[in-house]
Length: 393
Image 1 (spheres, rainbow, N blue to C red):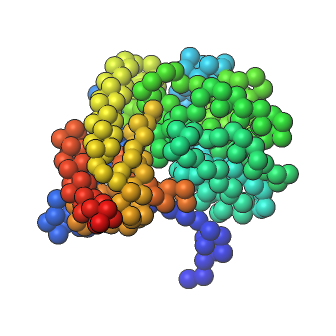
Image 2: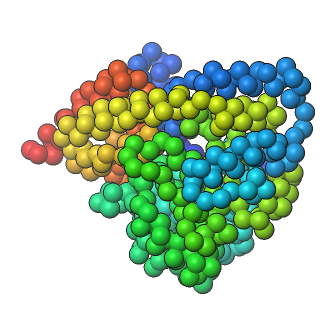
Image 3: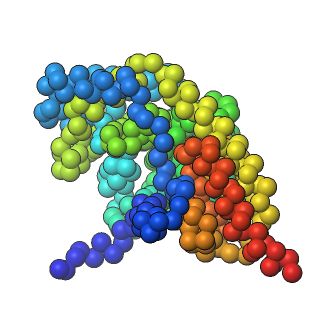
């Protein structure tokens, strides 16, 4: 079978591969604590599930409007206006089967061969994958622990060239849990306006924030008309399997996004969209409880990892990932990830799954029980202690 050459340029999401490897190891009878997948371990709230059941019983089993049912677009617009700090019209909302299509459609619609896209490193691997797939040039902007895992606007500005077309930002961030400040975003917005660039703002973790208030770059002057906001239901409402996401886009992009949906998915599942309406308009106590529990787990795993010699872990401000520096062990993140799985029964991701800056890091998802997190830290310490002792002589 002869594949198109562009298939050589498409990447993958290593978390799924790592999970499969861990399950295969687990099938041999070994105990494995899974900290690799970025998926809330909570059930979708009951009121949301019930809304989907009602919708099915009432006949929501057919095609829907390509850009989403009006009720969901209205609910998203109202919620975004309240939470993101700028006026959102339902006409600018495009509903999709998951949030990943927002990345794909934005890059397909805007990037031509040779165009440059600045993206965070470490960052979600699909950013780079999709840019390379369409023939663009992916330009990494380093995100460093010493800067609180915040994108440095000055470094970003230095990467802009006449070929730059798009800037991708993610806050709160995967894999680091870093959060950009209002001042950071103000400076990034100034770069975008000065060079007439579009911004893809990945805000999928916007509700999973432990300190302070969420701030959207689209709320800054002159930015709503040049920002594609990516958001969805997977993380906030524990709806990963429902595949429901959305974009808030400038008016000129509504039709291109609609055409891309027509040519790929036709529309988003009808009953899932009614579940989304209930998620946004119904009680929010389940979200609040989940975030409160994640904060407890965050402190548990960060304090635990920082007690292990050779490991230094920054306390994330959002999302549900810890991204410790493990250079004190003498191993790379990829090497230690292997040792942790096969010697310790802990499945984590090598930092290089998210970019070259993560070479000496691991990503732990703390979407797991407190008991399992405590046991995972014990297992990590047991594997790491001999490595650090050997280095110290």
